[in-house]
Length: 459
Image 1 (tube, rainbow, N blue to C red):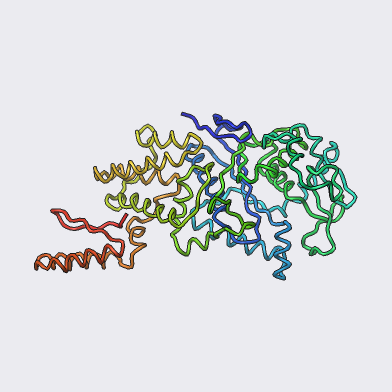
Image 2 (image 1 turned 90 degrees about the vertical axis):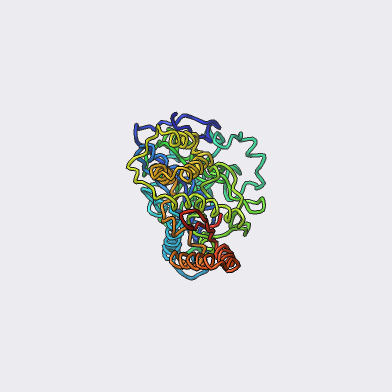
């Protein structure tokens, strides 16, 4: 079975084949860096981390570009508020972002362009658009995109211009010829700091948000590439505007596949900074381990809404304990390469090849864990670890993970087991039961057998 991906542009699952055989070029809209990343951001970056991991596992060479927006109204406002330069703020927040997502095992992209490094390319696209009559200068010094002059506008969102226009609540302001028009170049304001301004043929100013991604994607991947990704909230207007700019300037499709991940929700509301209902990655990692958070994010299909709660994270950790318990029971054999014809591996691959179906793939991991528990097969344990590795899971030390919720190390647990055995030998069953209960309260379950007593983490 070949890989199929849901394409937002066609609203269908389509068989994937890259423009250049064996090589995939993918661009994903990254962070606007003015504050810490929250779980909604982590969900987006995790979704495309899984995508790029599976593409590599499928023997594609992947050029993965995830940009950084380091000039924006919110960035300027935060820098002014703190009394520091824009660069000082963005460097600080980027470092924090790398630390937070690195903790989750999210691999760095091949290229991580910063918007401020591509202003000349942005101005080049704006010049092309103006020459083609798709951009115009307004009286206030802005340069705007003339949406109604681009015939394909609305094809990604699936809305006609009339529908979009009917939804507009703002009158024609700021020199726009139409409320749907959007800014390509913003004229500088006297109150803005000097490091928020660039000189151009259009006067002193800075780029609009949408033009930034058009410039960075085309500069790093070419005028047409394979996959463009981002959160579902970017489908309109950001990605719609990217298409209008890039295709309007170059006359070529920007991306063959448009891929969008679903929202994270809290109490049925989208998690966002504007609503104030967000949890930062570092806040969550103060209470939960990084792999449990990763498992929580990965086990739901990337296009589905994800409901955030402590209960769901507790369940994720307990589920990981079940998988790690199997690897703690049987040391996994090294797997040099996965045999995709092996029945479990074939089912895992079929799940992932159907639009990165992580829920079904993870179900295969639990079946494999059950098989390890039954057969004590090192080869089966090795396959479990190798398949999970393609999702960035189960690569840690099993005993360390299982003990993480306990204040006891292995030596202390073994000492308690010996004390319990001595109590049983002395027929002091009340003391033996007390020790068992004490360990259970520490998250340790004892398992008696004719050959002795072993322990496992509570599930």
